[in-house]
Image 1: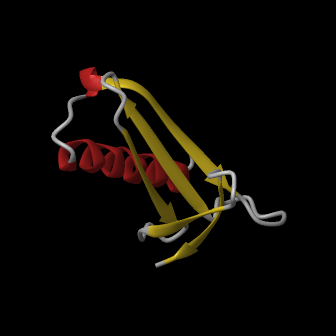
Image 2: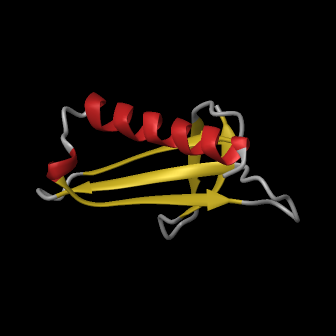
Amino acid sequence: MPREIEASTQALREKFSALLASESLDIRDLASAVATFFYRGDRTWPDACLIQVETRSGTKIEDAVGHDGRRAEILRDDSGRSDRERRS
């Protein structure tokens, strides 16, 4: 596995673990967890990643990071879908 992908995977693992810990959750509390990667143009590296988690009790949590690993703001269109991001 390329070093960049390995580093990104580790960063995602750490971000996901921090998100769970910040909400006092354990992996067993989850009903689903989805990571969505956003690309612009013909780039091979994602510009952002959105993490969405739903617990078994129905609580929904989400967080986003930009290509540099810094927290990103989640912008939504009128339907409520995440469709763009910009660094906060």
